[in-house]
Length: 313
Image 1 (cartoon, helix red, strand yellow):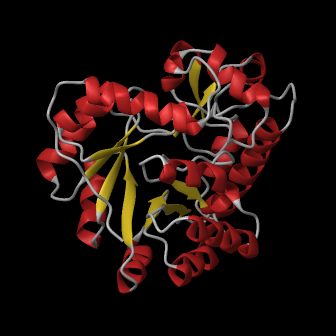
Image 2 (image 1 turned 180 degrees about the vertical axis):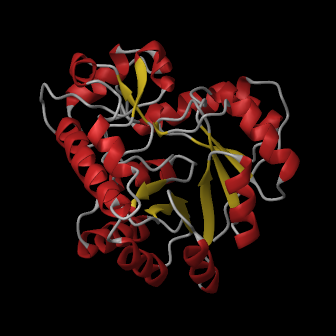
Image 3 (image 1 turned 90 degrees about the vertical axis):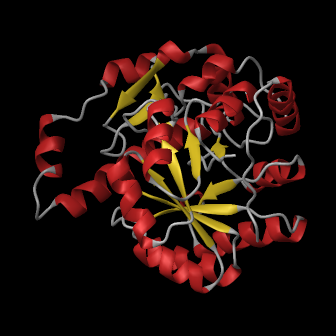
């Protein structure tokens, strides 16, 4: 189960682990270090199965260093790095025996993080939910498989068990699956958000750069149509100013994510709901156990024999 901003919580992680898959949550889902520690300890007290935490490692995350120290101290099984240079995370995590998986969208960055010692690549394709890449899943997995020597985890385009079989056939070692878990009973988001994932389809997913400064997939609600999906002239100008870029990115990310947070948690007309095209296959709101059971059944009914990838503590 992929880490999902504002959606992932301890109930979801525990349900995933109880039903045979691993899971991760974003460190930024918790406002304070005390809350982050409590979340990790809650999961650890429930099970000894491995789980991870997603860490934004660029300067748009002022909490990065403190969050990293907490993850190292409490000993999560793996850290997923996003949107920055993972060198420090890899070095410090490996000292503690913690694996590091790095989000990548192309071969250039994949080779960089492999050289730094990453344990696996999370191949963020053009079909991912949230922050998204530009390359379709098959092409990205194939490209990385032919040029890299560490495991590849497919992110994007996996909604059914048969999709996982296909990704494994292309050369992936596993998949990071998010969107199909948004409309779950355990998620502490609004019923309107969950129902939107059921009611809308793949053709309703659009890219916006207004929320974080980076391409982000959202449901094309009337509100999104009204505000548009392109950054304004002034936002682009400020974001390209070298001396101000760090601070502008932080401001855009903070402003945009606060807007997404309000939409996710409350019934509001300002509906900016993150999701990927996998919503095409979400037909009802269910408990996580049922979502995994359905996915596993579909996977078992696929006929392709593929390798597996196991995360070790």
